[in-house]
Length: 400
Ligand code: ADP
Image 1 (cartoon, protein in one colour):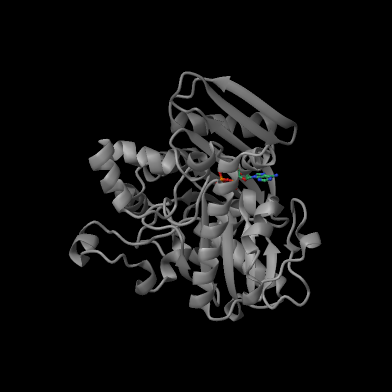
Image 2 (cartoon, protein in one colour):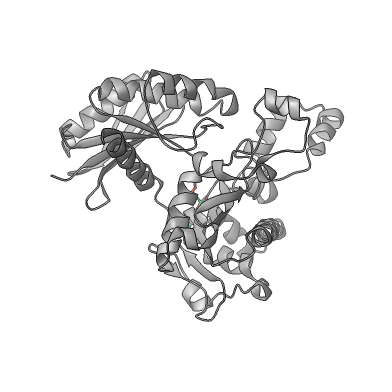
């Protein structure tokens, strides 16, 4: 009988889940419980008998997880605990503590809680989700898979900020990166597409979703990434600014009287494409450009410029680049962004084939010309599958 993994991603007011069959590596069921703690909660489960939607108050993550169990029981597939190898949990921040996945016990759960100052919105929610899931599946190993782990191989030169060392040490301030599970999955898969071992290839991964990050992967190891202490740094995103001169904050604080919370809200929720164009979703930005909106056009130029800056920097650090991989919502679907962000990089050996690039890509696709020295791919990411694979590998290794 084929093994299964339940992958859980708990947010502050939601629990997303997938039951993955490890033989086929396909999702048998997916779902979400959202609006936890609000007046009316909502659950959506896609299982054997199609989609089920439920609306009712969901007090907390314990109740949310109980609903997940009942949805599986009522609408299938049945979760057979003897086939369930692991429950794999996505954890945003593992700090310098977790360079790989960890079997969850009280100590690990406490370490995740202790890292909350570095991810105040995420880690407390993960702990609530872990507690509820461990109650729901007391006899199954739970594995924590961290968004930051893949980036732990960065050298100090890449992760150290040029500020007072003692202060940085005291408050654990350094670059941790994010989206690591995706960067790992995509970079390895890109090596497979090249017919090579990950240890033999250098890849630049461009994870472009609402949140966006780039990474430089040398021989399978991350040597630099664009997100920083938090997922605010780096590329222009849907509503996040990415890189900005920190003095802008002093200036706005002094001149506009903005508080720390105002500034946090500005850079995390009202900047990026939203701040520049009034639209978060890239499709809306393109529509605005088509309608002649100059701000939207400039917003895209800023987006492309920043992306090229990172490609150039990582090219310099890697020395030799075998491939560039586009992934996530924009990377997979937006041929305009792919074309324009790579335009002008032919002198670096990056030559797109515009016919191959055209359209949305649901599967791995080569979008560079046959003689482009750097191969460019679209590689759909699958963070849930990567979490499931890592969970099985860890549980299997721990039983040997
Ligand atoms: P996240 O997981 O970070 O929330 P996603 O990876 O789902 O984000 O990406 C979401 C973004 O992908 C949307 O905001 C939208 O801009 C973009 N996107 C999705 N589908 C398309 C499409 N068909 N064409 C262009 N952009 C798209």
